[in-house]
Length: 205
Image 1 (spheres, rainbow, N blue to C red):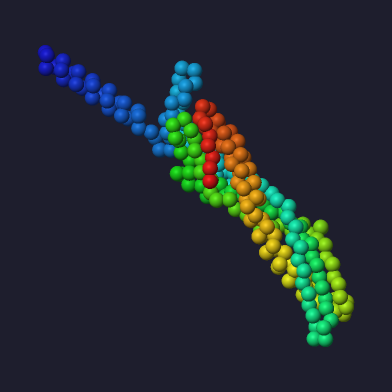
Image 2 (image 1 turned 90 degrees about the vertical axis):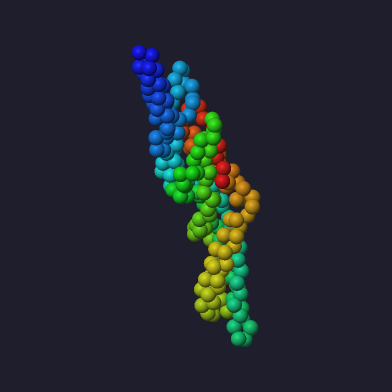
């Protein structure tokens, strides 16, 4: 009888341990997080947050308005000149490609949800064609097609200048700061919908 009771007790202990081990093992894409809500805990799905962030695709976080001033001079064989000055304004968008985020970019660290963003990207300057100013000077400008050639050269110079200015440190820092602020807000909303009401959100590059 004593042996039977011991065997029953051992079996009960093993069953409880096995049941605990099964319960404590997270399902794929789900990490249990203790978040007291009344008298219960919730399970937070990290995969839902990642899918929600990816769903925003290419997120434009900042826009700058820049102006390039370029000058080109063409001189013919007898010294006649055609000068052209071009003022080219453009919008430049800064964005984050959220669709490129990997599974390891979203993780739980204690009571904190950490999100690591892909690198900040800069789009090709979008020229504001309605505000371009062109100033042509010189006798050769009136007597030839030099203006067209100068325009082509100035256009190439302007795009290069605009892109260089778009990479100025002050603009990059402003774009990064705005990206972080925007993503904290967006991630907070996504996390709340996924059940992470009590998690602190931290976003970084």
